[in-house]
Image (tube, rainbow, N blue to C red; front, side, top):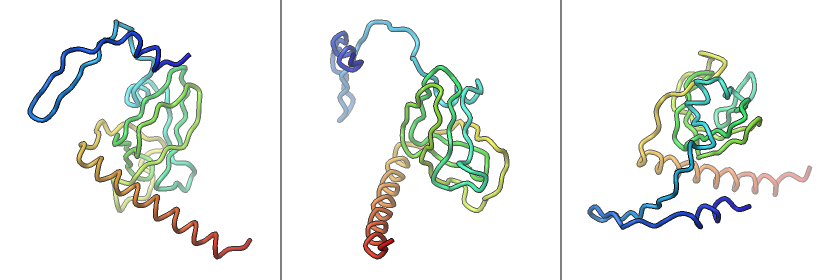
Length: 160
């Protein structure tokens, strides 16, 4: 079963909608009910998900997420998480499976604090503006390339 293929077989293409230099082609699908996922904010409010530091000491670029629910959890790139040792933003969009535990990549948005305000994160009820997310993704990509280059150089030096 391929959900994307199944969806494309029933979807209808509506008349193009244009505004200035933007043209959208709406996709119309039959009523299919509610989404089969919770947003991060919904899941946090329902206490269906717990987001914490990865360890007692924490690591700035990673958080641990435990989904206790039977639902998937949708986490959007740029969503803010408040609490624990330092407020963070999520680095990418994820659809987390039910009853699962994962580590998600994040970035610091609260320089100068590295001490617990709470053990768990709550929703910051904010998401970064598109232009900031784009700039943030460029920075994340640059850092990942530099880390990969550093690891490669390190592997060439170490013979252990």
